[in-house]
Image 1 (tube, rainbow, N blue to C red):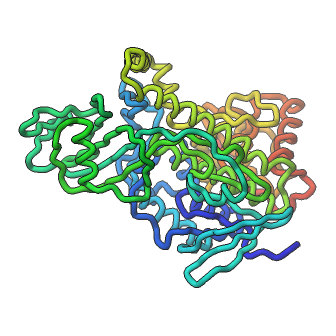
Image 2: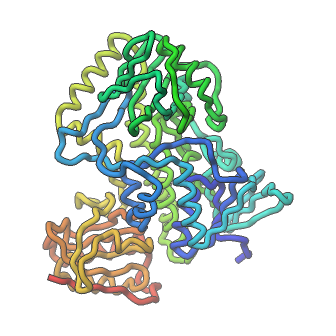
Image 3: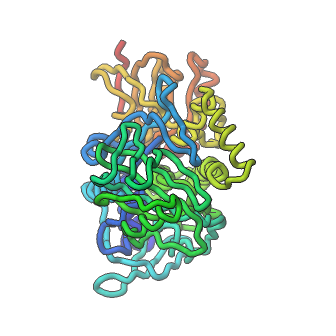
Amino acid sequence: MRSTDADVIIVGAGPTGLMLAAELRLAGVRPIVLERQPQLRTVPKANGLGGQILRLLDYRGLTERLGEIGVDAGPTAAIPFGGLHVDFSPLVDSPLQAMHLPQQKLEQLLDDWSSELGAEVRRGHEVTALEQDDATVTVDVRGPDGDYRLTARYVVACDGSRSRVRDLVGVDFPGSTYPEVNRLGQVSVPDSVTQRENGDLDVPGFGTVAAGFTRTEHGVFAMGSLAPGTMAIQTTEDTIDDTDDNEPLTLTELQDSIRRVLGVDLPLGDPIRLSRYQFQARQAERYRAGRVFIAGDAAHAFPMTGVGLNAGMLDAINLAWKLAADLHGRAPEGLLDSYHTERYFAGTRIMMQTQAQVALRRGDDPAALALRELFQELLTDEPALRRVGALIAGTELRYPLPNPNQHPVTGTVVPDLPLRTDAGDTRVAELLRTARPVLLVLADRPDLRAIAEERAGRVDLRVAATDDRPGDALLIRPDAHIAWAATVDEPGDTAEPALRDALTTWFGAAETAKTEVRVGAVSD
């Protein structure tokens, strides 16, 4: 086979590209990351993490690091949804976990982590051309010291919604760009303004500006408090001009927008964060073009803040282990294509709920007002409130797996079950630190253990006990999704062939596995 400079070239060193680099290194793959910008980004973009990605990052052992740079981690009591206020406080447990974390701090964490694992990140290196054949991909690169070429087995485009790589391989990015321009600022409260306990502001010469959403004929003004002495302000107004999200927002521009929308000169204190963005609803027609894969904002742009960041990192976790299996020569047929199948499906689900938010927040005619009133009323019902929370969190997602998918947990992310083993108490998260597949046997099932031993080296066998077990056994992929599950006390003549089929579908034939199995015994 032709020699290559790397196993995988990743174009773009945002959260998606850096997460992919780290995941590939965990799987023993050599990535090179090429980033056009010479330094880590400083322009504020996403402002936090929420939902399913927090669980996956915990499964990789990053919770403590995240806690050092993020704040307000935990169950979310309320969240905006399409201009409405979704209040989870009536529920015993919130369906949404979140953490306040500026994107630039997250990128620094992921840059450090991927570098510690051995990934090479080249900043100030821009891809200008690309060609591929049935074995390799070659990219032309413009770097600080001149032009050069790199060859790899695969390339992954993580270079944003205006992806150069996506254009080079001819993948369409259909959808819409909405006319709304959103300007967001987190600022200190100036001395001339009084902030009430409920978040309202008393503005001299004007009166009270209410916390929450205020609609006018010129747009929407939103205000809330993230910390004592600070306020978060957002304006939304239509424009016919294209905006550049990479051009820094100024305090003057935010104040001008407030004046247009609200009709008042609102005093603002020192800026902590300023950003501007324009919503799109676009999804790449395919996430794979030959030996080139598309991930993150290059694959999808959602009309809602923060969603794309979470979805892109989940793209990376889904793709990495599949690329690694192919590069190590053990990928079963169709494994790489399952990246598009699963993540396009996930993107479609996210697009559905974020475009529903567009319908809720846009328009001020009687029909639009009635829609918002009805939706807000529905959110007082617990089932509807939990369903919306699960949609936002992504916890309702269930991949459409090719093998029989009758067990209710297959296709979902494995919960972080508390486990008892002969080595002591542990939890599922500890089993997934190394991003390897696991067959977790939770009952006395020597028949299932024997099948796993046929795949020694491909799948780690773990035996444990847990209360309220979801099944006798769970086959967990490296991306933490459950590929197969045995129902409680399911007979061997039913479970065994289904397990063999799932193992072959995701991890290949038994006879090619060569290394040792890892086993832990049940502790009652």
